[in-house]
Amino acid sequence: MQDRNAIIEQAAAALESGAATPPDGQDPQSMADMLRTANERGSLGGYAAYKTAQRIIEDQP
Image (cartoon, rainbow, N blue to C red; front, side):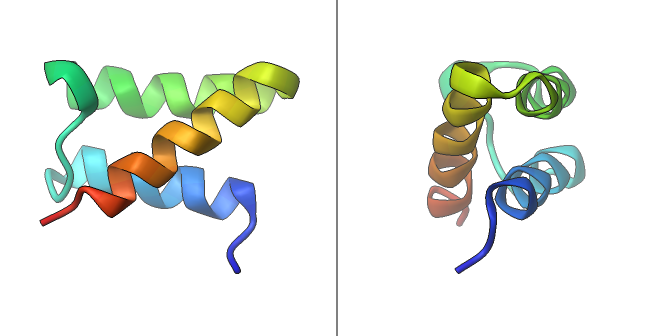
């Protein structure tokens, strides 16, 4: 199983490359930045970023 940082980075890279669509029609670069920032801050924000990243990866075509 991948660790939280790897999953968040994978989702952010997918958003930036256009391989994934951000939830709720958000800007892909803004969402990628948000995932990374929340993860860096840790705790609850990091966990939320991790769960969002999992959803982005699972929803990839």
